[in-house]
Image (cartoon, rainbow, N blue to C red):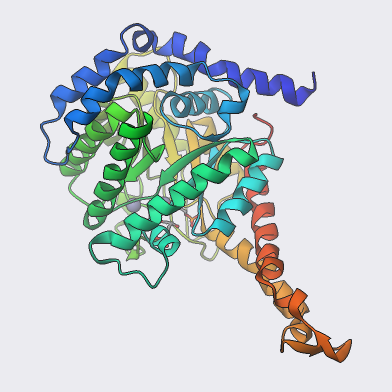
Amino acid sequence: MTPHHSSRARFQAFPTQLQKEHFPHQQLFLPLPYIISLFLYSSPVNTLSLKIFLHLPLKLKSNLSLIDQSASQKSGVIVGDDVLNLFKYAKEHKFAIPAINVTSSSTVVASLEAARDAKSPLILQMSQGGAAYFAGKGVSNTDQFASISGAIAGANYIRSIAPAYGIPVVLHTDHCAKKLLPWLDGMLDADEKHFAEHGEPLFSSHMIDLSEEDKEWNISTTKKYLQRAAPMSQWLEMEIGITGGEEDGVDNTGVDNSSLYTQPEDIYQVYEALSSVSPYFSIAAAFGNVHGVYKPGNVKLHPELLGKHQAYAKEKINCEEDKPLFLVFHGGSGSSKEEFSAGISHGVVKVNLDTDLQYAYLTGIRDYVLNKKDFIASQVGNPEGEDKPNKKYFDPRVWVREGEKTMSARVKEALTDFNTANQL
Ligand SMILES: O=C(CO)COP(=O)(O)O
Ligand SMILES: O=C[C@H](O)COP(=O)(O)O
Ligand SMILES: [Zn+2]
Ligand SMILES: [Zn+2]
């Protein structure tokens, strides 16, 4: 057995072991959370139908089989307990999974290639704007039509191609502020339809980001969405405290500095509200995070605050576990390896990376265009002869591929920095 195979075997074993250790009640009384959640469905956001209720026996069967899945079934999009167990495994083994913002099949395959080569799990996510881009910029986004259709198209594409790369992939959507909730509603409709047909949601997880709203409303509304996701064992990431910079087209560069650092009491309030519904959630707590890359010194990250949040939550919950929270690091671009490592040591299991990868994708194409400018100025004629055809230089499979290579190399760097490489 090669070292790779033995570590792979360890990874495959963890779901069953962790399931027994941490969620024995789910093995013995699996229907209980579903039945409880059904009683909790009094919220206006819930549109869960009797169809899902009737579908429960199938879901329970598929849930059990997920826990016992073999090596080959672990490749491709994972859902439910596999996601939970992957994050638990990451927390215990001190690594975080990069969440890459994808906008096209090209950026999807560039990311998958890196994760396959680095023997790593991966998270692929679409923002509301990225999802609309997947649909095509020419499609109207009235009532989130393009963002919903594009997210569904992207999800189906990722679901189809991810198994070819032989790694587990978490299929996620990014942010989603209050005004974009119809986008999330549309995707949840698609999840419930997929669940009714296949026993699992279309997406592994979503994010909801009501961090700019009143705290009580943020938490209570997020809880309602988790109540809708829970019967599908679907993960929900939420944000409390604000990520600076720009997201979903909203400029947060001028927000009050104190909102960039979440307080431990607020995080515990989130934990208390959400853990009463489901264990499938994570918190993007702000510790100075900013989207985008700016001049040095602009961002002051304090990942050590996350350690304080974990300690506060542990004391309040009175649990054995030192790090009861699953934390998410937004605005990964431009951060140092030390900042990542500090966050990961305090229970960060997911790091969002976008801007650095946008730039990395560009550099391959930019350099190609600059180096080959005399071969792409016209269809025919280059320095080797005025009649020479240039088709092999301007074929998008050649120059777009150059962007994929540089993006892939940057994803690999992140996999090393987050200690994700060789975890499979
Ligand atoms: O947080 C992010 C996406 O939600 C990505 O942030 P960066 O663009 O700063 O990497
Ligand atoms: O929110 C941050 C991500 O980088 C997504 O950005 P976007 O809204 O420009 O797609
Ligand atoms: Zn936000
Ligand atoms: Zn973000």
